[in-house]
Length: 202
Image (cartoon, rainbow, N blue to C red):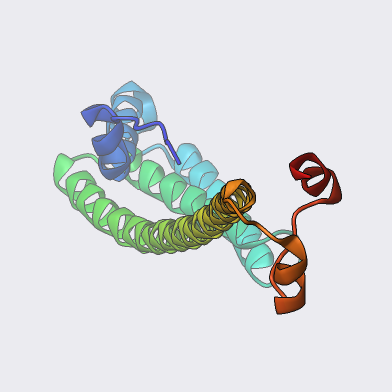
């Protein structure tokens, strides 16, 4: 029942909580770099990002209704669609206010979606730990029962050996007494000595 205790680093604990903010912040930074390099008010770039975002959204719809994928693929496609739309708008806009507003909105939505998965994962972890605890308790109970049973068998064997030793001692002591008559004992229904031992006495 010895288990390895692994202490996780604080960065490993905080990284999942910071991942949505890091993702949206990275998209905002890339979009503003793209804006400064010619994407501002570029109709071609806006049309490209719109088409990519719509295509990713359509893929998410198809995956969610079961045509070509599952929930994981659908979630990934919708997240990609939102990221492309956010990047396109932040790259096309000429000021920071709209980009920051979209960044805040995207961060809130990302944390809302992540919180749902974190709750599901936490429930699964708690259920798994509870199941392991029940298995450990059951195994410990079985081990205690087996230990008690083995102890009882050992005590029975010890008591049987002690009884046999005491009986042998009593028979030898009885045979050594003066005036010992095995026939009288046999007539009374008491245990007799072996024939060899009675021969030795006579």
